[in-house]
Amino acid sequence: MLMKRILLSALLLLPALLCAGPKEDALFAALREDDPAAARAALEQGADPNTPLRSGLVPLLRVRTAPMAKVLLEYGATFPKEPLHGQTPTRHLILNQADAKALALLVPHDAQTDLARDGTELLLLASQVGRPEAIAYLRAQGVQPKAKLGFTPVALAAMFGSVESLRALLEGGASPCTESPEVPCPIQNALAVRQGACAKLLWEAGCRHVPELSYRLSQNPPEAEVEALIETHRAELETGGQVSPLAVAANHGKLGWVRAMVERGAGEKTGLEAALEAAASEGHWEVVDYLLINRARPTTAVLEAAVWNANPYTEQRPKEDFLRTLDLLLEKAGTYTEAEQHLLLTMSFATRNPGGSPEAIRKLLAHGFPLSARNAEGQSVEEAVRKLCTDNTCAELSPEVKALLK
Image (cartoon, rainbow, N blue to C red; front, side, top):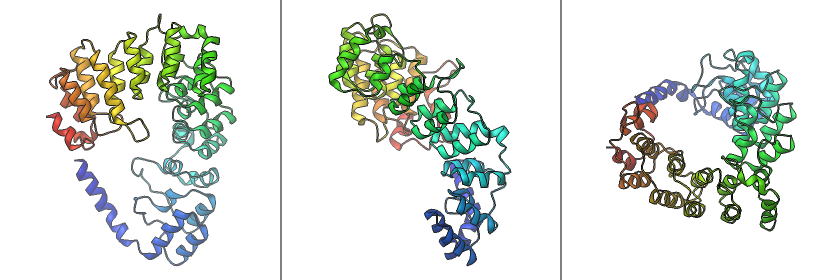
């Protein structure tokens, strides 16, 4: 089904692409270089301002600056009447980094967007993908940084490490803290995903809903100062959770910091599992090993963190570190329910970085996790994986992983 849709989309675009000639190529090049004079020259030579680019987007959707927008509008460029690739024109403009002046010119031409209705979701999008210019435009139009879909724009900017978006929101009057208990606290988001620069902005803006030691450690202080910091804030070592000082140290892979805190009693009352999960999620096997020796329990949540990251992105630690982490956890693993086995096996096929981890799958199977395991709904691992795959075709799974699903 997915392949049929791709082929159909290609056939629908083919006539337009075949019509694109040297004049349109010159216009496309002008758009790529953001050269309004070159775009005007191409249009005066007869280039069609509404011929789709090779991406399928019409030129107006690729505009980044107001001068280019003015030229295209002057020569009759228009937006599609229906969403393209599932996105409205304004969403395309935000994703393609249109600046505030370009948005001011073009959003009024987008019949699919009503800022009174869609403004909050657009602000969330701009915050997530790091578009401070779009944030400035939307705030100038009166869009408020409210919570929607379980997040505020500030919380999303902090989670995704968009420092400039976060700065634009705060300078525009957005609250650095979350007022609703249903919405994650921005500085907690920042610490949990190691976004130290965002945490610094929020802390300085008055959002301090985390232990001070956790914040200080997130700023990567000099090693010579860490012992004194831990001693100064010793009372905070009893704090638990994902943003406890111990969990922050574990997330950063700082074995020395973790050892210093455990030796001072960290985790005695709250447990070591949050720190173990934080270390497992980043493949810090040395920290995982130390915490397991100190009787941290490899709960289902901890194994989830390791399995989900077992097919790491290039910017993460090497795959071998994650697989060694999983080995250490499985050595200490207890008994898991059928539903937990089902969850972990499913996750090994549907990893954070799509494609699955054949190594993690084999390790779980060797540890006695059966592919026949079913969840509470009676769904098999294969059924669950296929439901998670694009259009139920498992198109994202590698051939090696697909073979293990049988």
